Amino acid sequence: MPKQNLSSSGQTGPLSVGNVVSASLRIYRDHFKPYFGLAFVAYLWLLVPIYGWAKFSAISALISRLAFGEVREKPETVSDARREVNPRMWSFFWAGILTFLIYIGVYVAGTIAMAILAVGAAAIFGQNYVIVGAFVVVAVIAFLIIYIRLLSRLLIVELPLAMEDNLNASSAISRSWQLTKGSVGRIQWIVFVGFLVSLPITIVVQILTVIVQLVLTPLLGAETGLFYLVYYLLILPLSFGSGALVTPFWQAMKAIIYYDIRSRKEGFGLKMRDR
Image 1 (cartoon, rainbow, N blue to C red):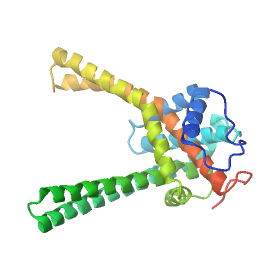
Image 2: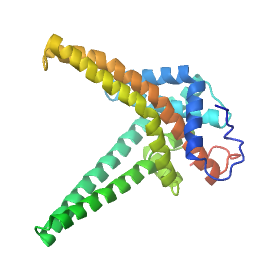
Image 3: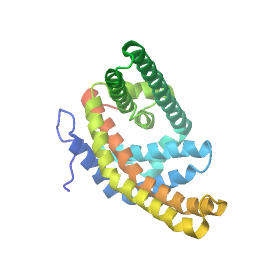
Image 4: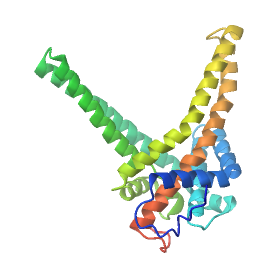
């Protein structure tokens, strides 16, 4: 794959979906060893409650910062980037918590709204199940559209925290919301193609999980303490390894989306924006 110079391509419009995904793969390929190593360590930190989760958030953001430096052709060493990211570790953690709460809140509100619509439609149309069903289908589709748009607006929350000064968790969320305005449709397509690229790894992991379960069940018996112990001892490294494989790709993709949006909206002969 030919190397594409994104930072000096002279492109005034947004990068195409293919450009974003292929550039993410190229950056990951060129830096596979350090990025995968960082991602695997991040997944190991998930075993430690709270502090380890904050470390996972910070290391994920560190990978994005490294990828962003590659896109701008101003690469950083891991140690230099870590010095910038580590002091903001708890901001990454709280940004993740706030984002998660937003997702949950919207999901709960949407579920309640759909239930109210379904009950209302049933009360109005009575036994006309076709019309009631149509109302429910339309409500579900509308909710999915809104929810996917929300996911797109908050996709790059960690990038402003990793790259810009004087931001906290809540202002990083606002910054992501501001930057992604007008780019939601393209981000959705990028995420969809990224999902397709990652899908083979997910399928392989699911197949291996089923194989492990089928092998262990006759040997140890189903739903015994020993079965679950051996099962999770085998599955956990597999899950962590597969997660570490795909995480750098997604973090690089977020970095390119962030770079592309900022270069078009704010220009990139600019110094990093202080807020």
